Length: 263
Image 1 (tube, rainbow, N blue to C red):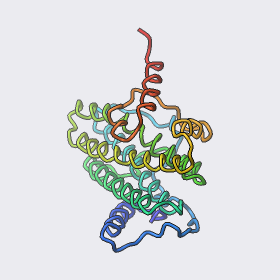
Image 2 (image 1 turned 180 degrees about the vertical axis):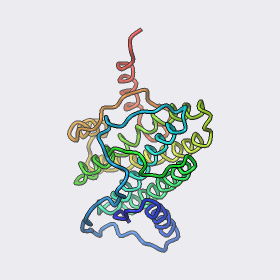
Image 3 (image 1 turned 135 degrees about the vertical axis):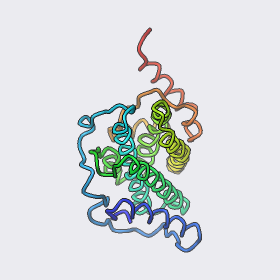
């Protein structure tokens, strides 16, 4: 499924697999080690992948600008399906609940992708019509050999950035009168809180298992793997709901204060 190149087919398959696991029709085998398939992840020839700095910004006051935004969000959600599925097959030896959790994430990311694709079609566009960047999968590649680093730097760093970015984007869509797109952002934020919570849960499980301090370990891994530097403003309410501890939130509050312009 991770190797599937057709986005819509991948989305349907991810949701169907999780439903079968929930129904007891498919069993999880945590100890089974799988060989890596070729050409991961499966993705279509388009969109063209470019450096983030080459992606232009357009006003959300225009339909074309909102289509570009929806496409960018769809690209994030498509990559998020791949990220969740990669965690399922790559890291053997975790508790069974780990795999069920990430299959749930894959299914919900697939739902988000489907919602955004349908809305994008209402603007006369499809996934692949605009260029995109590969930042999410790049971090997946960097953490391929370390499940602790993966849990630290994909859900707790990259996906958590979505918790911060979602409310202002939603507000701008509402301001533009695009209530349908704003409603999709509500669904995504609600589910993404749960996804980051899952990442927090398994990161702390691994830290507890290794008897290491979670906060110091996160800072070390961020430096070691060159994770993007966090920038505010931060959605403290959503981050708290997603399982970030008060020590971490206090550190973010200090960072936010440092980044704010004086006066």
